[in-house]
Length: 50
Image 1 (spheres, helix red, strand yellow):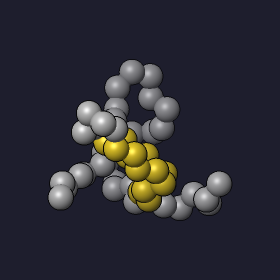
Image 2 (cartoon, one colour):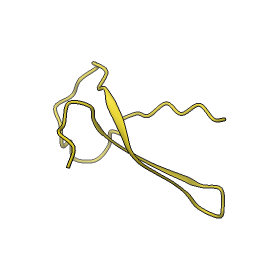
Image 3 (tube, one colour):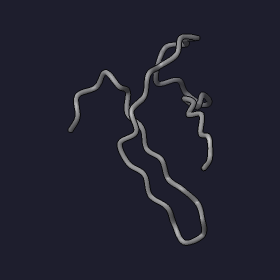
Image 4 (cartoon, rainbow, N blue to C red):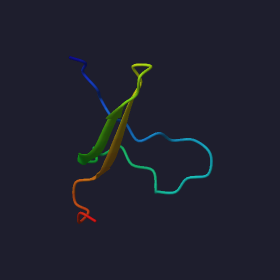
């Protein structure tokens, strides 16, 4: 089992205002590829499911 700590990556032109507060995230997709690489896609927990 791996421990994953998601972060919002910052760099380039900002899409959101700067903030040091934690953003609650919800895992919406998880895929494992044959190479062992895992794709984890998150959405803000406050966003409605689509």
